[in-house]
Image 1 (cartoon, rainbow, N blue to C red):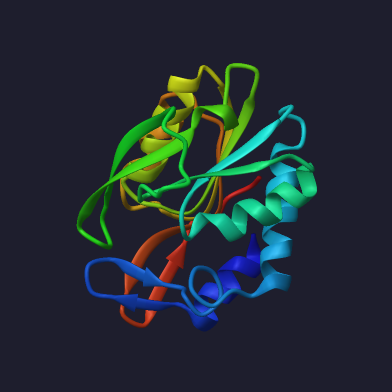
Image 2 (cartoon, rainbow, N blue to C red):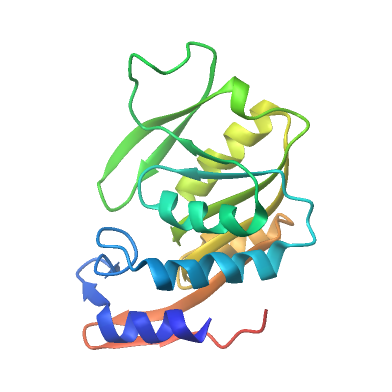
Length: 193
């Protein structure tokens, strides 16, 4: 998605440790018109997959998943990272390591929101090693639902997550694949979707 690459080049910042900071438009301050286009693009890529639910992880994936859900006209479910009093006791759980926070999270969703009848599209803002997506895959498998696609806004192509997931047969589509991050330089992979 050329417009995403342009936004990254214009507003993104490369930080130490192969961190790409895009919080001015994607995952802290949100650009609704741009996110609408992202949702529309995910719909274009996965519209023939029979999607009945969109699943993401809090917090950064929610805006992308919600915009995508508008186009699919299906519910959006997000895995929570913290237990609260209003969370059902009957839940699916998994563990996810966050590279940017250097922390392991327990993620959870209520069993009443995902079951074996669902055809799921997983959505997230970043894919690097694949830890967050692995957690969402685990939750989906525990529910008996079928994963029909994985939509990622920005994939770090120089890390192994995307390669491994594609090698396992997942229908993974990334809107922008970054092959190199250096201060003052971001190189994208040419791709066709």
